[in-house]
Length: 398
Image (cartoon, rainbow, N blue to C red; front, side):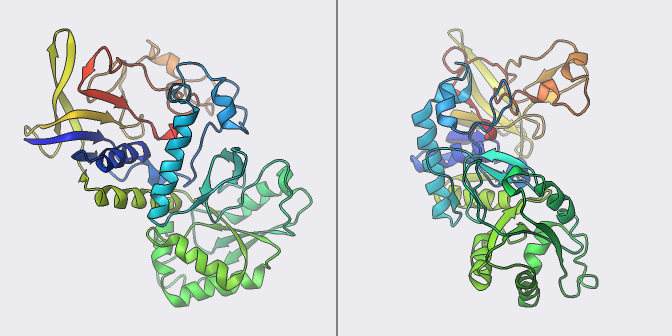
């Protein structure tokens, strides 16, 4: 039997943050993660109430808007001050691991440019990104959208066409260009993923080719939009070097998964957790929990994982940060939706036909709990049901 003070289930943003905070407080902490986590699919930016839950309209001043949310909304429950403190803690945490963020002044969201050339509201972005709002002129003469020949996960033409339609770049020339890396065909670089390019660009020959072609296409008066192709552990160091050598203004955008901007955060959190003395049980998943009832209160006696089988793991506190359907934190079958570890109550439409929108491309209703509305499925709270304490985590809440 393994015994801990805290066991965190889930290796995404919420799970890692909870585990790090627990380990830093001196608690013996284990983090159980069945895979790489959703950060490998993430934008690398941190959202704070990017859209109004009811109208879906972009929110400019999120902390002012929190007071207007329904009382059941996670931000309203946590409160403005605690949310700000958590964001400051996170920024300092990843800064110590070499990942740097910036944001607009006056506690407001900014627009980040997506891989498709559209805009999305967010709270803070990694430093090699331009912070756009609706009022401040950006001052660039042109926008250069740099693709890499053979890179299938970023289409410069598509991004450039959409950027040209944005109000923020009205009247500004937007030009897509293609970077051709040496021996792109023969060395197998064509049609690879971002992480393959990150490894390849450690080669001075390929790095210099990228740098020299960017200088040929752009000037310091331009904004250069570049897919994030610089590595996990030292990606921002490479970008700082590239900026210093070219004097260009860069905006990194995430690519189709795997996203190096998200991987940078994931790796930083992993390092912070191990440095704090945490135990990482990676590649394992929780399959069941033993529940005991004492004086009308249910307690978690222990959990069982795929790898440990009948060998239980115990803790005085469990943090459930298993996410939603994508990470199998929720499971749907032909007739129901359920939480697979603790059997928590889930509020869902009774009939499966009511799970979906009549319009195929609209968000499915059963996905809105942890995305559009950012509200978790209902389950019994710490105070009246599960002891040791059990918390629900969702990375989208940060």
